[in-house]
Length: 150
Figure 1 (cartoon, rainbow, N blue to C red):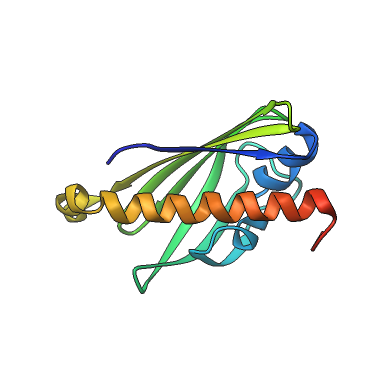
Figure 2 (figure 1 turned 120 degrees about the horizontal axis):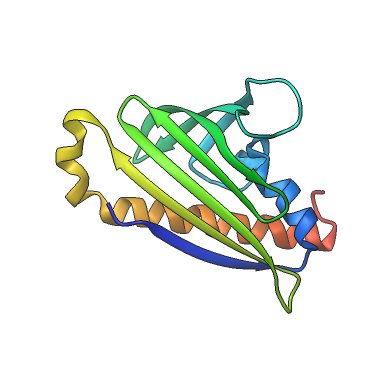
């Protein structure tokens, strides 16, 4: 599968954008494919923190566990997601920009086992999923920057 990379600009300080986005407890607020999220480890987010996500894509429910594998505040967080049929690596980078913060979201989604046979046909679906997540992230960061829903 191709790696999906998208960038959004946020009118927020880098530290604020990082603290919100890097904590996957917030992902259901901006990713329309995520229906529920539960943090399953204690303490603040760091390497090893895990989240159980319930997702719905194409009408099919999917359960995945995401684990933080890289934690470099306020610059970068990497999470690996593992489910029955899917493995994903989400790399999110934060950098100062003229607007406030540039957030680069990169998703590398791979099918597992026998489902890998379908990968060549799923590119459009995965791009649509990535577009929805980035559009939701952009909307939510704009809300936070204006004090809406904060």
